[in-house]
Image 1 (cartoon, rainbow, N blue to C red):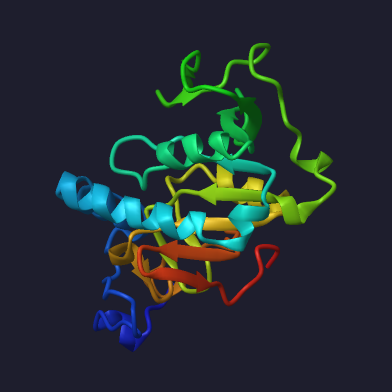
Image 2: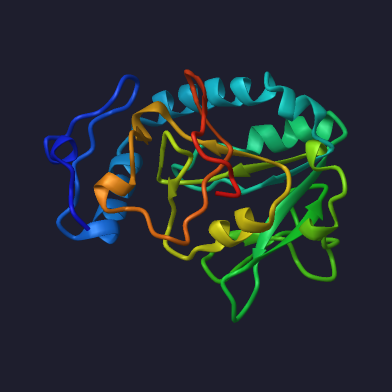
Length: 224
């Protein structure tokens, strides 16, 4: 994929950081951003995540959501554990993902606590089939009351994300009828992932990207 002149110079628009294309393409960019994220000072990272959490709780989409589909944060990901506890305290249904064996899809299960989960194929704690009830995304009848919190190594201003390479959330977003929110620290917001050679035809954007500085309303619909 060709690079634009602006991208080749590392240019970025207002509020976006300059990110240079990686000679190894999408995989190389993932490795670089993973390393940069892991190197963030823990205290500063926690402070930033608290700010992002406060932004989430201030959104109308959060207030009206009866059900929250969310990743369970691990390592240096933007924290969701505090938001999960807040959701339970507010009486919301919290659903966590489980990787479906032999496929690149996610099943979602309602959880009432974070104990009792089990390591999945990638070592991430997941709900247990038969213990945690399945929630079928296609059965959602009032999409205005469903919210998804989506992870990513980076997001761009059109709502596209650089994920971990499995396509799980792209498949989920393609059929999710509710509001989708990408949680992103400001330093990992870029102008255009396509210009970095990091966007494919099957990628699906979130409806809104949220950083510690506030929401970035994506230029494209999550259906786009």
